[in-house]
Amino acid sequence: MSGAAVIALKKKKPNPIDRHVGARVRMRRLMLDMTQTQLGDKLGLTFQQVQKYEKGTNRIGASRLQHIAEVLQVPVAFFFEGAVGEMKSAEPRALFVAEFLASSEGIALVKAYMSIKDTKTRRCIVQLVEQISPRAS
View 1 (tube, rainbow, N blue to C red):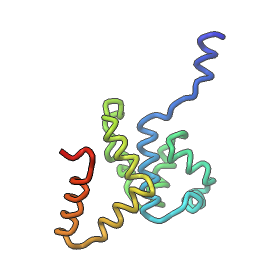
View 2 (spheres, rainbow, N blue to C red):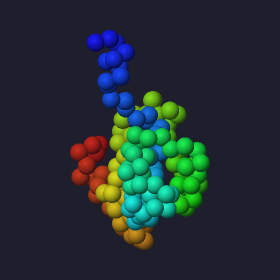
View 3 (cartoon, rainbow, N blue to C red):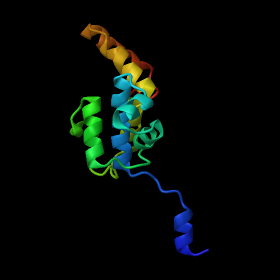
View 4 (cartoon, rainbow, N blue to C red):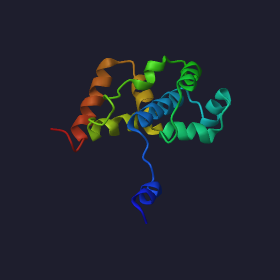
């Protein structure tokens, strides 16, 4: 098999920026308690296409990103917040945190935390988590 054929058979990895933008789309969609089907309906897409955008498998064009921003009620810049350059130099931990915050568990945790109005209680929760964390110093 020639070198070109081997390259053609390898599965192409999504671009880190496309993954980041997709994760931010997912995070915002979940924050609004919107399903992929609901977002797809508002954009004239299938839920499968939304899923591919969120995974970074398919790139989101500029006009489509503008439309997504309007539907999700955020500025286009929202989708690039937290992107580190071209994310090639991003540390794996930062990418892990961004992916967690875009997950349903991450969204639920942030929503629950943000619903606690007492700042002292919120500070105590952070201290508790830091104390029980295996990475705590």
